[in-house]
Length: 305
Image (cartoon, one colour):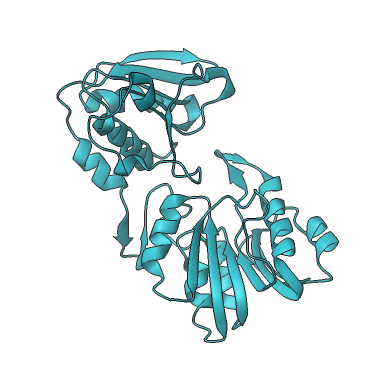
């Protein structure tokens, strides 16, 4: 394997920092089809460029995996916005035993280091960021996944109002499978397709749901044609953040995909923050929309196509 064939890139680099076009292996749990850094061999990469995740446990986990995968002496570049963990990267790398060059550019902190021969604290960081059974919710999850260690209030409210469903359905943005577990209590469901763009969530949902009617897909619903067609129902708690920034269009795209996937007369059950502007797009796609509940800053809708 040549040196250019075993370079790694983790995450999507900001346009201003895009490296020169060199063949590299893409890693990211949020890019369907990308390689899993957890499964990459030790000391097999000749270099890595990383956009670090914002959460502390998730970031230390990703950096530790990158250091484990790098050959001794191989360069590692880690960057993040200053207000999303960037100011902590140098300290975290130093704690792993690295000698760090820390620079600032365009609201980012950029740290470079050769992978030292001796490292410390990697296994602890990997264990702290790995999949685990969360006792408080009785479900498998992982730091970095949406609402990873609690049932978020929007999903909890939807669970209170979700009826017994029937036929073929889908859970859009399924996360670790909270909504699907409740939906599958209905014996009238023939098949339920769980879709999420986070590989970690899909892996956790696979552990949390032991039901032959469940099919799990690691996919980005913003891409057309990825959901089944002719569905009887869709359930969802659509995301409204992308890369840490609020993106109202993301949830609206989920609603459009639900309308495309449903048969005439099919139903979409949706939970959303009260301030999100979803009613307008729903009115253009569904013949009937009912506000079923509103509490704690969240709304529950039943929309019939």
